[in-house]
Image 1 (cartoon, rainbow, N blue to C red):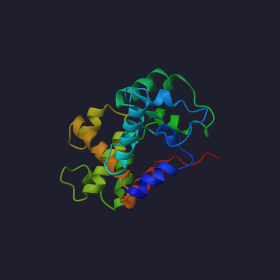
Image 2: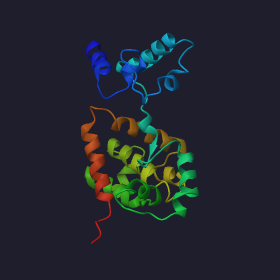
Image 3: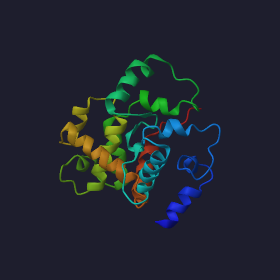
Image 4: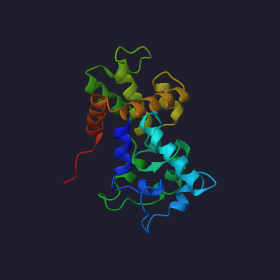
Length: 207
């Protein structure tokens, strides 16, 4: 714990030292703007901010990256869908290198294709992944996560959930749990499986 705290406070490429009063603030860092809601006095603000950040060294706090939809927009499902309908579907996609993430939002994978790809990865019949008591629980959970993430614009969420015999809320819970599992440092094998499935779904490069 002490070692991790020391590394956090000594990291040279972070403004954290300035925000907790261990170093002079660079001109381009507005510490007042960051700290103004953390207490009445400057000392209280620094203490509260430091306590909040450093509790993450021991407490398991939810990662904001779990809320990232399609690698592009941070927000709820409804917010992402609103942005997609209002802006992305009304514009063309420009430079492929610069707008790969936006393509993910406009394009949607086929449900059957995703489930089949997961089945290939786990060496199991796709129909088995749809069973509530599937013999391949991890594969089913990954299939639910990928369908909820990649097929959200092909069918309404209720229909996606029905594919797996669960409610819309149940599919959302399964997706959140798998998203959290994929961020676990001990789940390297699971992340590798997920990456292989995603890569298998990518369209072949154009000539």
